[in-house]
Image 1 (cartoon, rainbow, N blue to C red):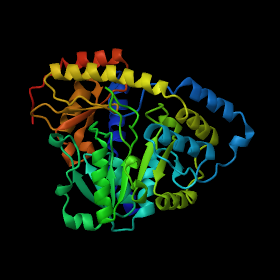
Image 2: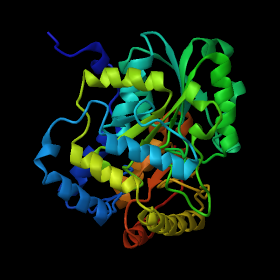
Image 3: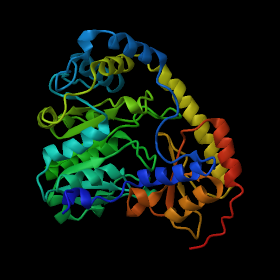
Image 4: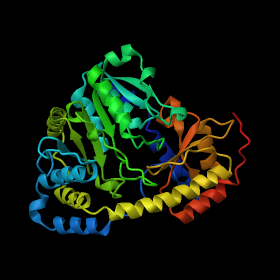
Length: 391
């Protein structure tokens, strides 16, 4: 007799976990693996954030339960951040909700807003957790095809009207994981117009909103007039302040959706550890000079890796944001075969594009999460590869 639910039994293996297992096997054999697969920053959180955490952790009052929706200090800091960076006004009590990382929030949002059988429109290629979350909520997936020829900007005409009619939610993710695509505010304006027309909840996952280069500033969907009536946006401190393991994020926007998600979460968790929320509030109220310095470092890494790929004949757009490079697989390879070749032959781990959906085939994702010195090692190793093709 199986004690496992059908939902879990039918979940596909999380490819990132599978790649990590293979990495550990190789390392156990003494192989030096350079991991450019998972998008986990190698940089530390800023010292002033650490200091605030230590200070608040020493106060016994902070070891009690947080309020279910998160501390006022953190939610007010999120609202202040939106006002300063986007000129958007948010009510911290009704339009901001604390999350235990945005990944948790995304999964729970789907459960809070759809019924079994409802459809959710998701980007392809896109972050795999979106599809997993829809599956666990008993929903159906409608894929929004994105392609390089259009800069991975949505082409709404590619959505069949029958699919849009049965959908409840439309997910976007800019700046994009995995493609590193960036957009202008006009894309969000068109998306909101469609959402209003078709009565869809518009969701933007903005986990990489602060990691940008060359003067580009990522827009927020909340900047679109009327967005609060039809949209929410997820944010995270994981990438902008290197706080991945701290598990702290937020969602802002439509107060009815925020309330529904808060209701669900109040039955499942009791928000995040208060000292973490207070440290995160300090980060959001800072002058973001640490973010500026970090972006300068990521840009240096990106330019080095992008130039090396070009020299090897591997095509990739030059990103304006995120910590990723989205590169074309050399002719003659499938993405999973090429990723395995890199790992097996030169000990370099990347993520095959197929992990992000069918339209990710033909590409691989590089995470710029190692030092310049290690990138030099990566480039040296890649240049030793025979890329003659074999498929």
